[in-house]
Length: 591
Image (cartoon, rainbow, N blue to C red; front, side, top):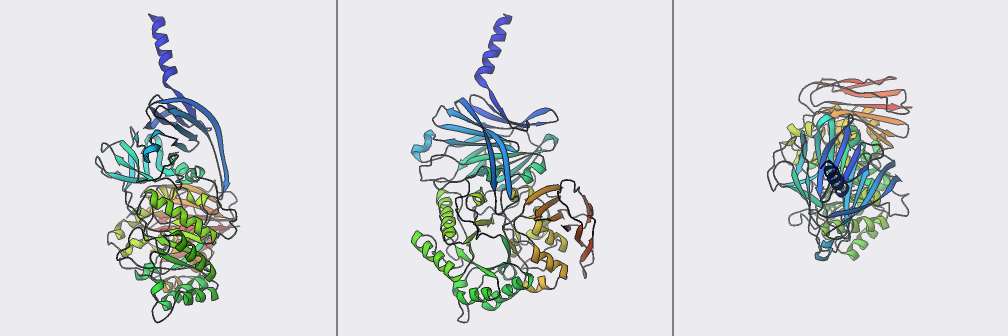
């Protein structure tokens, strides 16, 4: 009898299970007959993070993988990662690939049975136990808040990226990467209003040969914030020449006026602002094809070039909001029209385009976006997607895509009064959610008010320019407001990088605070914000900041409404920062 029990146990283990563990020994993916279970090791114990269902999993060939590449924009220039990839055959047909990295797990299916009906297979996932979540309702432009422990019910449509907190300060960020031309993107639905979800792909009429990568970044908050797993999993750069691609800061007309750019006199003010501060770009927004007083877009472009500022212009994608939306419309949809338009832009000396108002995650939008990036690259044009789905690693594949909106950003001060009271907490949540997965065109930094007031402090607003990563960093405020600031603030904006060699998380917690250090060349920028309505003391360590210099400029809040700045110079970084309600700080450290 005893021998029989031992035999049964052995057979059960041999039938059911194989496991891959990350190189650092902290992340594990176990294969069972009908699901994959992902776990994380903390304090010597494994805790289950989630399971993903795949009926009929067999086999399991494994290989080591290594990522090593250069990014022209983003949180880190030189990206490296190591992991293991297992290939499992599926009873329904096709192969399931599972990758286990030091900072997370990803899976994708290739050659599945459902290819014939041109649809993607749903993937049910279960997150058995989490303490807190920060999840966003799905919208076609990915613009919403990430409330803590939001209530949701069965059938609710939810969006990536979704952040979960587990015991022992472990976090997981669920998202997607590497969308190809024949694929639709995915999102997920609640199956039970609690901890079971279904990953579902949007409409796709193409015969896709594989799915995208579904991934969860796992670890401490520093692991999540600093991760490059989304681009690690994406296709390598497809451009042979990238020498013309230059990230940079942009002066932007829309925020102050809640309107486009059909007035040359206003456009000139923003060109002059860029020239005065030393910003490389100006964005000429919507309605430039309807210029007032007999002027034209050529007049605006020529004025910018005369001032040494590179102009970018706006287009309506004409697949989302079309009726009643601003112009120009229908200039990019057909391949021949797109080619003609971008060739014309290149001939005028336009540096890039902002394309707005897409309509979601279906294959039509994904393929159209890729066509836009490829055609733009042919004509040395930078791309900024607005009103679009969130990044899924395209910035590695097509590095002329320097930023994407897909965020509830400062533009919303024009739209709703509710943004005013929620902005500080929202700002302190974005570094742990949306901005983890790619460049984010929040359009930060406004010291004056637009249609609805803001109650974040001056130092909080300035901090957003370094706290939020974007390959094109559009400054929101009006020229007279920027030019009225102290010279040190104007110098800061003129020297601000839009691409980073290194990013280091220094502290914080979603909606409460965030402190991030970013390095460009030999200069470190340390930015922190208070997301609460109470005074808060933020502390951090500089031990992980390699090559930290001794020339320090600190921007803090004075507490005086008539003279809001406290700007100091010295040779010591103050690692204890007393922040006003909704306040912040920026510290610039040079060699």
